[in-house]
Image (cartoon, rainbow, N blue to C red):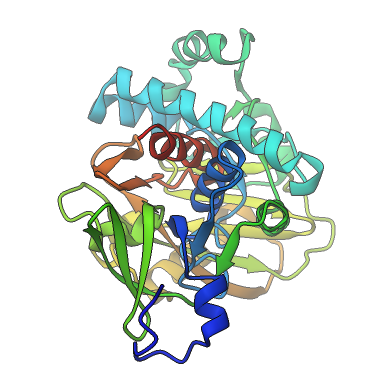
Length: 383
């Protein structure tokens, strides 16, 4: 039982029914955290599983992302191979592909409005386009085992005019990528967890987590101590406070969305500049995000918000490349916090005897998050 003298205004009933005899606490109520809770509860039906989420909605990126079901653009994959090597890249791409399939199975394609529209990458000069176009045979050979398809990647330059892009020399297409409705996906996942009798608590700030005896103790909000047998850290870009020695750091992503545009030509998902920029249509609107590479230091933050430098750059690309000669208005802006590191693979591991983590999704949480949650839950189940 909890100490009722703790400085927090909870009733006996709340302490008894919610915070007592917990088997697993999951820190983070996003894609990874909910999938971890769901997997643990599915495999151990008698377990009491509690998810603690610091926001009203998932705080980091799970309901703030652009809804890309992507595995990595051509330039991003080639850049990653140069920095971390082929083995790490293909292992991670495999996880992204498998993770997306898990998400489809759990949530259902209709429930997240999955659209297999493909993923395009824009190039703005001949040398850049030719540099990555020559890698198509290599990419197709590498992706063939993943999809049993010989031509996942294609030259889509002839489609530039159809979309109305300006200042664009060439375009590549990954036919296996797509888009989802992030809100519908998370709403469905939330309902599935509730139906499994998983407790989800919002506006809970975890201040610390420590091994205590044969379990763990979390200090939350105004000094309330919560005990559990085990804990999973699934707070991605906010995980550094719990994982001091691990290579995971926050990365803010700024996003804008336009008001509806009459006769919008842009349909699909698009990237450029090694995946640092991404845009898509949401109905008759354009959602556009990125430009973090303009200020890596400034965007390495857990503070939400937007900056003139990045917002002005996004507007410039909208005006000059994506929607040239097309009037538009920005309706809304927001930001999300991702978890990144020097390696692109997520960190899924046992931290201490009863604490586990699944963090550093590298901006690919939609694709990889379900698998990352399942794998960390399996670690906790096996211990």
